[in-house]
Length: 460
Image (tube, rainbow, N blue to C red; front, side, top):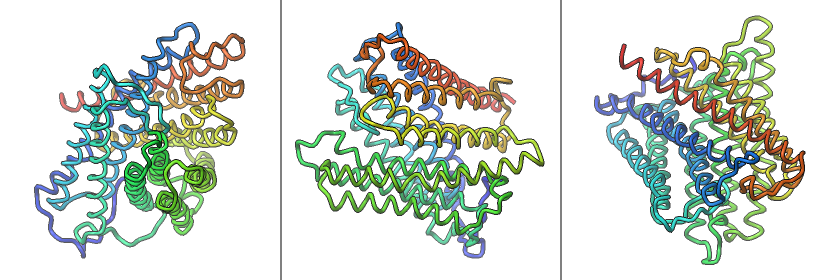
């Protein structure tokens, strides 16, 4: 029972009924917001795929606006909304006041997403393709993004306070099979650290510092949040594989501690150096280069070895096959990232591999939760093949973008602006486009099947 959590009942304090009811509803609400964000980001992904596919290019301005909304919905809203839902499952918020705090965070975040979506209708909104968190340069978008992140922060604080309160004190059994919730706690701490880095940069940066420079540090810390949540998914859904190799708790603790230390190092850099100076950027870059990938690579390797052993004695489940895909995508993203040289499409190839791994892991977690909740699956064979379609699509897109980048194709531009005349470059971008179409199809199938499952449940 991967999603079950053991608590020290002897230290518990009776919770109020309203808080208990809200504790059950809150994760569902966050999942609903995440599902909406993924569906909308999929629509914008169609625009991007068409724009990057040879002979089908759209206007550059339309491409960049769609790129901003796609990235923010897919990497910021989808990721963090799912994370907030998982946080509140791992650490239930049963105290009435904390439940209201987390509920207020949801409504604040939801209103923020609405503001981000309507901001393009402001005629003066210009896309700013900043790293990690691209924006539309209009007050409506800034207010919406701030409200969304503020809502996530309220959910994080509610979970953190609940963790340390006597009413939900978790058991002190430091076993590998319970470590997914400790990975979740580490992710909460990392997110609050990212908020601190963002706040320091926005407050102390000189007037001539670009928006990209202000968001650089916090964006790096957000990647650690996503990495920790990926590790939490592996620890939760891959328990059988990890048990088969006898993974020790102290090794898992060391992996999680390494990621937390990277967050602390990033916070120290934000406090010690002026924003967007060479030392500031170099510090965050070196932390990402050397400190953030060893732990997930090690855990992913353990997972692959465990699945290899399991496959000798029984048939792997669809979720377990999907977990293998998440590990392979993450490793592919890391390998491609090691070859980054300049601002070419190798950069998006790298982060599509790692980000695709996190997205696929969240999809698998949702499938597992639907199964445990008894919701009927919709989509038939499409639902069964959805992880394979999405994972293969991301893999092809990563290979295509990496291939194109090796030939000098620049990032953040539609295909029409690249002026590729060589057949090899067209082939590379065509491969990326085909992969993007399959990935978009996989995401669309996921969104549609979730909607069908919910509808069937309500009509039963």
